[in-house]
Length: 283
Picture (tube, rainbow, N blue to C red):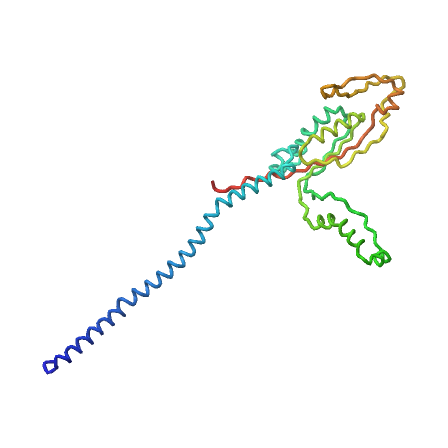
């Protein structure tokens, strides 16, 4: 070392410093740099994920409003099928007798107020019923000569237009509802029958009078010769109010006017769907 020149010593010193720096880089700086690169990548990935999550979080208030609006619209549309005749208990009970009792209590006032005499009252089994669409089905007639004569396609276009509603509705799915049928055997006058049907019509919920079979459509029954018959006459006064008065009609005229009675068979079906639950939005 003593024989080395100053220049050689400086070269060795510089090389030693470089070696120390390189060794320090590989021993300390490179791992730290690698960790920094790794952490940077992790940060970028996490930030991207967070941006996506934040975007979804920011959309939650709007989604809540949209769900609430959709619920309100659906509830309004479905209210017609939430039938008070069944009450809230029907969807919560599996006891047929209880369902029949609820239906009996519901329809009895309409029977009483219309003065129908009931001789038979039976319930069908409550179950699912397909709600079919009501629509006009045109009677489309076509044959080979007609099609051959339709060289401009006018008839085919007319058929397409006529069948548009039927074709469109046939593609739609039908919904299932709870259905309960009531069969009534009654006797009464024409006025009794119409009063009862008016009461059924007053129900805002889903109800359908399936059939009305009248034994004596002239309503001449129950009138004995010489017996006076009291007829209720409805008029409207100057204020627009209905006024009901009674008028006595002799038996012969009463029979001709159809003021007697007849036996009748009525079939009525009530429909029901469970009310839509209020969405739980975690508020």
